[in-house]
Length: 412
Image 1: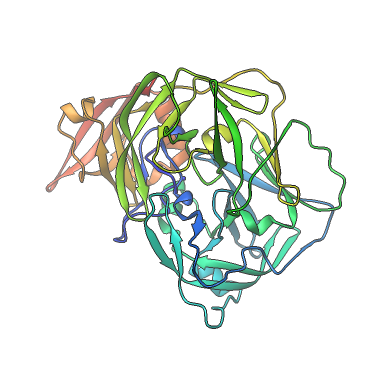
Image 2: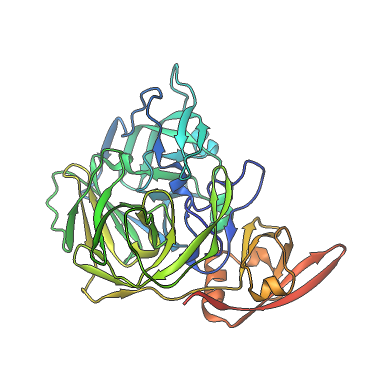
């Protein structure tokens, strides 16, 4: 990646300078990392895995913070600062900021043209390749890392923390990668170290350098991408399937992609979703015309270990009780977010915000009488989850106007 939404959590907004969008709690923000999930065939050969990976101990444990269903890794840069990364298993490439490239001494590969990258909606973006001499994650050292440069300011604004890179799945090809959502940590283990992985192990298809696994929706089977770079619980392509909905689907999620925004459909299924032996009752889904995927909105219920040598992934949680996703709440507004103000990106049709005349393009400067800069993602999401009404202050010419909106279940 709900304060607002889409599948590359807003990495990819329109080319003009805008912040990522936000709306209700986590389930509605679909991370925008997945907009960059696949290099196009036919481009210049591009090594996806690092030239060499070394470990200084039996395993590296990286503390992480769960923000908007993303595990944000923090690793020291020097005595006074840290780097922050997000692991995106739905991406076949690694993205790094220009500043990170400078600090790590990265250089452009010889005779390498900009790379064509296909977004979640099929559009193409050209990004410049770079070779990082090294990338240090705790005691794990990756050398000769090939990456693409991308300005992650929008993503950083959205999460309220500086993001220096989005780490693609092939970076961890020579290790076991564990995304431990339950303990808020990321674990990197070298091959050859005995590891007993409890839980349910599922084979995956890694031909596209991303993990595709079989899952079950009611009585029907389908293939889905395990996508830690998506904030959504489940993105579902309904072609060839026969889903029934307990609620919806209705417009309400603003999808942000590399090529622009579009309103998405969201609802709650009547059928259960089964991942191995784990059952999710009546999951909330975002309907998509792209590849079906399991995102952080579901993954945060598990510890997930990826073994690219054996092409298998293990899901674990302490019990096999059915999982039920909470209602997705909203005030009916989606925003693009920068520190000074939030711009209304979309208004849910028929909501109180719509009836009171709030329109796309309106600028919000305060929430409950506090500047928007005082409302990072986690705090705002918690507000939407727990309160019944929110007061927004909008700029109206030279004046400010307050609008108090009820919080409602966008998806009950």
